[in-house]
Length: 414
Image 1 (cartoon, one colour):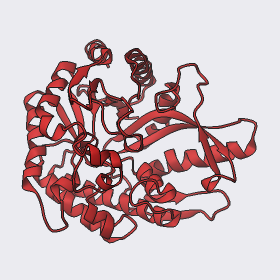
Image 2: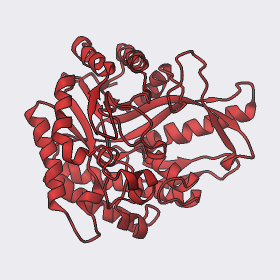
Image 3: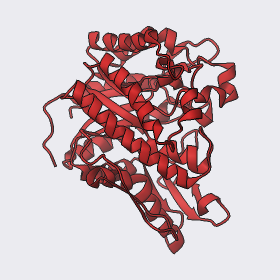
Image 4: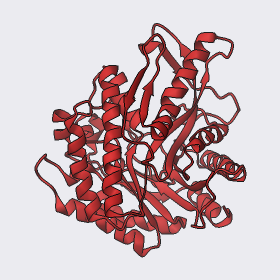
């Protein structure tokens, strides 16, 4: 394991542009009726200065946010320079306040023209995405930390396996092709960023879950959880180590797809939320049934997810195989109970401290999220924010968890 850096530990919060500000040009805008009723969501696009002041109140030294591609390139051959200037101003404010920006280039949403003409299973998608990356990076060469894609496996599983999000295609074969193209796009974006800024730190944010068999004595459940663990958690790590994406599903021929990402990783972003128990059920799609159970007594979130702090250590240990610094790029809880949010935060940050004590090279922790946001298929009901948003008045109100996170930042010395 590489030695820890002398740089300050990154204490931050994470957000995504669309989940705070919406976009009239994004694929998701026509996907959910909630967005037709509240297209600007929290109106962060107009209220961003006030929201960035909240970072100062928290005392964070880092902020992860995304660019909304569909605002920057609303039509295939049209670029909106005002939108680019908007995001550049956010970076300037962060710099002024001593907050390190971490910029995510792709956080689930696409311009509508892209998803209609060049969805990720089409090879031209890579070039179209990289044209956007060139524009963004050339305008923001002073940014050090970049995330190319947020949760690419979630994007592909939801969009191509389940078909519950854009592009809504239920075709695993096209899904694997889409995943390979996304990884090729990461490789291209990595090169573009490093050409503009040789000292940049570039990664993906990979959603990792603690996966376990529904019934430990059931051999089918055990096999399914092992297969899922490899595909969902480990196959991306192996692809960064070997340059090959290996796909192994039960009763299917193993696929090995070359992807040019070997070594194209300066740190690794881990998004962690929960543990999932898996059951083989031939009556379910792809034979998979999943559930959350409060086995350890930490409770469930408002979204029904199991709170499982020990799982964070497991996924960080998996990720340590990459031998690059690790940053927890998302970790949070959906709950209206501020005390529950505080307990969640403390237990997970205690686990981060434990992992650092075990020698893991962990450089940062980003809580999701700064303020309440639009939470995709869950709409506006999943309250992740350290600041509560009244979606009628758009007023932001600090929760007790905000004060507690500020306290932790001041008193934890990693």
